[in-house]
Length: 169
Image 1 (cartoon, rainbow, N blue to C red):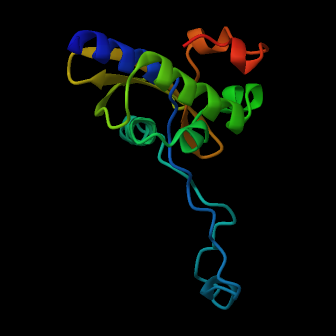
Image 2 (image 1 turned 60 degrees about the vertical axis):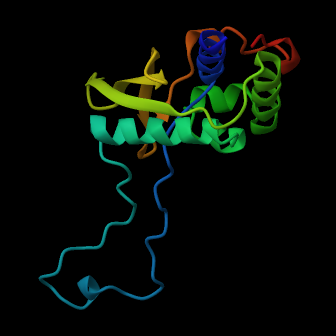
């Protein structure tokens, strides 16, 4: 019974995505010292975002896993790449994820652990997500708009274009 629950939890996690949003607050409303000093460097006009490292991609996927485990599916949707966010609304994603949790008979709180595997260039990383150390599944993270986000799995992209009620868990 435990192995079925673990497998069901892991299959449900196949839905999940990753990365916390970088801060966009970079203005204090006043001129910086750079404007009054000829030797000070100019202030950046845009936040730099997350580092393009395997560690940052892994941390982003861990945040995704934690949102999934806590039932924060709306927050998890935010951690997917533009590809998924353009294909399904946040509301529909939440409805789908909640339905799958119910159908698979698994509850919130499953501990998921993420480990970094490798970088593929500077804008793609491969990570592994594990459930109870028994099952591991690879995920692809992509760097978009200064943050690491999970690319949807092939299983999930197969449903794009269909009504969410027709998506299988």
